[in-house]
View 1: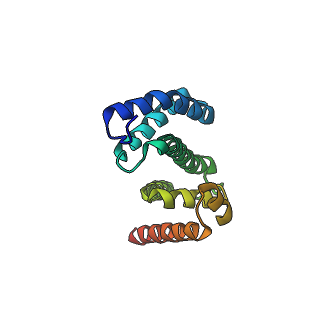
View 2: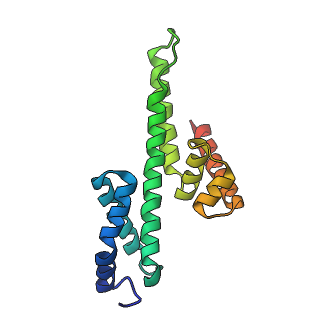
View 3: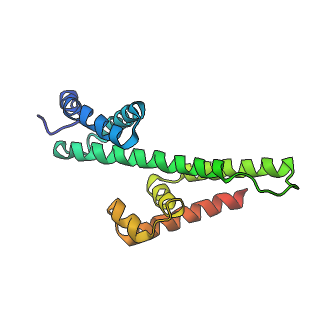
Length: 167
Protein backbone atom coordinates (compact mmCIF):
# COMPACT_ATOMS: atom_id res chain seq x y z
CA UNK A 1 0.00 0.00 0.00
CA UNK A 2 1.29 3.43 -0.96
CA UNK A 3 1.96 6.13 1.62
CA UNK A 4 -0.14 8.70 -0.24
CA UNK A 5 -3.81 8.52 0.71
CA UNK A 6 -4.59 10.95 -2.12
CA UNK A 7 -3.96 8.17 -4.61
CA UNK A 8 -7.28 6.60 -5.48
CA UNK A 9 -6.12 3.00 -5.07
CA UNK A 10 -4.70 3.72 -1.59
CA UNK A 11 -7.87 5.51 -0.54
CA UNK A 12 -10.00 2.62 -1.88
CA UNK A 13 -7.85 0.13 0.00
CA UNK A 14 -8.33 2.05 3.25
CA UNK A 15 -12.05 2.29 2.54
CA UNK A 16 -12.33 -1.47 1.94
CA UNK A 17 -10.39 -2.23 5.14
CA UNK A 18 -12.08 0.26 7.46
CA UNK A 19 -15.57 1.16 6.19
CA UNK A 20 -17.44 -1.76 7.74
CA UNK A 21 -15.56 -1.49 11.06
CA UNK A 22 -16.17 2.23 11.24
CA UNK A 23 -19.85 1.89 10.36
CA UNK A 24 -20.29 -0.83 13.00
CA UNK A 25 -18.47 1.27 15.60
CA UNK A 26 -20.74 4.21 14.89
CA UNK A 27 -23.80 1.94 14.84
CA UNK A 28 -22.92 0.74 18.34
CA UNK A 29 -22.64 4.37 19.48
CA UNK A 30 -25.76 5.67 17.73
CA UNK A 31 -28.10 2.68 17.59
CA UNK A 32 -29.19 3.97 14.18
CA UNK A 33 -27.81 2.31 11.05
CA UNK A 34 -28.58 5.25 8.74
CA UNK A 35 -26.91 7.71 11.07
CA UNK A 36 -23.91 5.36 11.42
CA UNK A 37 -23.56 5.12 7.64
CA UNK A 38 -23.83 8.91 7.29
CA UNK A 39 -21.13 9.43 9.92
CA UNK A 40 -18.91 6.84 8.26
CA UNK A 41 -19.30 8.54 4.87
CA UNK A 42 -18.67 11.97 6.37
CA UNK A 43 -15.49 10.68 8.05
CA UNK A 44 -14.22 9.29 4.75
CA UNK A 45 -15.08 12.61 3.13
CA UNK A 46 -12.94 14.39 5.72
CA UNK A 47 -10.15 11.88 5.12
CA UNK A 48 -10.26 12.64 1.39
CA UNK A 49 -10.28 16.40 2.05
CA UNK A 50 -7.24 16.02 4.30
CA UNK A 51 -5.53 13.20 2.41
CA UNK A 52 -2.30 15.16 1.95
CA UNK A 53 -2.06 15.80 5.71
CA UNK A 54 -2.77 12.26 6.96
CA UNK A 55 -0.19 9.52 6.76
CA UNK A 56 -1.45 6.08 5.78
CA UNK A 57 -0.46 4.53 9.10
CA UNK A 58 -2.70 7.02 10.93
CA UNK A 59 -5.70 6.79 8.57
CA UNK A 60 -7.68 4.42 10.80
CA UNK A 61 -7.13 6.58 13.88
CA UNK A 62 -8.05 9.69 11.89
CA UNK A 63 -11.28 8.10 10.62
CA UNK A 64 -12.44 6.88 14.02
CA UNK A 65 -11.56 10.19 15.70
CA UNK A 66 -13.35 12.25 13.04
CA UNK A 67 -16.43 10.00 13.09
CA UNK A 68 -16.57 10.17 16.88
CA UNK A 69 -16.22 13.97 16.84
CA UNK A 70 -18.97 14.25 14.22
CA UNK A 71 -21.18 12.07 16.43
CA UNK A 72 -20.40 14.18 19.51
CA UNK A 73 -21.23 17.34 17.57
CA UNK A 74 -24.57 15.86 16.52
CA UNK A 75 -25.35 14.83 20.09
CA UNK A 76 -24.39 18.24 21.45
CA UNK A 77 -26.61 19.96 18.91
CA UNK A 78 -29.45 17.56 19.68
CA UNK A 79 -29.09 18.30 23.40
CA UNK A 80 -29.39 22.02 22.73
CA UNK A 81 -32.52 21.48 20.64
CA UNK A 82 -34.08 19.14 23.20
CA UNK A 83 -33.28 21.44 26.08
CA UNK A 84 -35.14 24.30 24.46
CA UNK A 85 -38.04 22.08 23.40
CA UNK A 86 -38.41 20.60 26.89
CA UNK A 87 -38.15 23.85 28.82
CA UNK A 88 -41.72 24.70 28.04
CA UNK A 89 -43.11 28.09 28.56
CA UNK A 90 -43.52 29.92 31.80
CA UNK A 91 -46.71 29.28 33.76
CA UNK A 92 -47.54 32.97 33.77
CA UNK A 93 -50.82 33.87 32.18
CA UNK A 94 -49.67 37.27 30.97
CA UNK A 95 -47.35 35.94 28.23
CA UNK A 96 -48.12 37.78 25.05
CA UNK A 97 -47.80 36.44 21.51
CA UNK A 98 -45.12 39.10 20.97
CA UNK A 99 -43.10 37.68 23.86
CA UNK A 100 -43.43 34.14 22.51
CA UNK A 101 -42.31 35.30 19.06
CA UNK A 102 -39.30 37.15 20.50
CA UNK A 103 -38.42 34.12 22.63
CA UNK A 104 -38.53 31.84 19.58
CA UNK A 105 -36.41 34.27 17.56
CA UNK A 106 -33.86 34.44 20.37
CA UNK A 107 -33.65 30.64 20.54
CA UNK A 108 -33.10 30.46 16.80
CA UNK A 109 -30.39 33.13 16.92
CA UNK A 110 -28.71 31.38 19.84
CA UNK A 111 -28.72 28.00 18.09
CA UNK A 112 -27.38 29.60 14.91
CA UNK A 113 -24.66 31.41 16.86
CA UNK A 114 -23.61 28.23 18.66
CA UNK A 115 -23.56 26.21 15.46
CA UNK A 116 -21.47 28.94 13.79
CA UNK A 117 -18.73 28.63 16.41
CA UNK A 118 -15.58 26.82 15.27
CA UNK A 119 -15.80 23.12 16.09
CA UNK A 120 -13.34 23.17 18.99
CA UNK A 121 -15.04 26.13 20.67
CA UNK A 122 -18.52 24.69 20.10
CA UNK A 123 -17.60 21.32 21.60
CA UNK A 124 -16.01 22.88 24.69
CA UNK A 125 -18.90 25.33 25.12
CA UNK A 126 -21.58 22.64 24.88
CA UNK A 127 -19.72 20.15 27.08
CA UNK A 128 -19.40 22.83 29.75
CA UNK A 129 -22.81 24.48 29.48
CA UNK A 130 -25.03 21.54 28.51
CA UNK A 131 -23.23 18.52 29.99
CA UNK A 132 -22.09 20.60 33.00
CA UNK A 133 -18.55 19.23 32.72
CA UNK A 134 -15.64 20.94 34.40
CA UNK A 135 -12.73 22.19 32.30
CA UNK A 136 -10.53 19.39 33.66
CA UNK A 137 -13.06 16.74 32.56
CA UNK A 138 -13.35 18.32 29.11
CA UNK A 139 -9.57 18.45 28.76
CA UNK A 140 -9.26 14.77 29.64
CA UNK A 141 -12.05 13.75 27.27
CA UNK A 142 -10.70 15.78 24.34
CA UNK A 143 -7.07 14.98 25.16
CA UNK A 144 -6.07 18.64 25.34
CA UNK A 145 -4.73 20.85 28.14
CA UNK A 146 -6.97 22.68 30.59
CA UNK A 147 -5.46 25.93 29.26
CA UNK A 148 -6.63 24.97 25.74
CA UNK A 149 -10.14 24.39 27.11
CA UNK A 150 -10.06 27.77 28.87
CA UNK A 151 -8.90 29.50 25.69
CA UNK A 152 -11.59 27.84 23.55
CA UNK A 153 -14.28 28.72 26.07
CA UNK A 154 -13.05 32.31 26.30
CA UNK A 155 -13.19 32.70 22.51
CA UNK A 156 -16.62 31.04 22.31
CA UNK A 157 -18.07 33.34 24.97
CA UNK A 158 -16.55 36.42 23.34
CA UNK A 159 -18.02 35.41 19.98
CA UNK A 160 -21.46 34.81 21.50
CA UNK A 161 -21.31 38.16 23.34
CA UNK A 162 -20.47 39.99 20.12
CA UNK A 163 -23.38 38.34 18.33
CA UNK A 164 -25.71 39.20 21.23
CA UNK A 165 -24.63 42.87 21.19
CA UNK A 166 -25.43 43.12 17.47
CA UNK A 167 -29.03 42.13 18.14
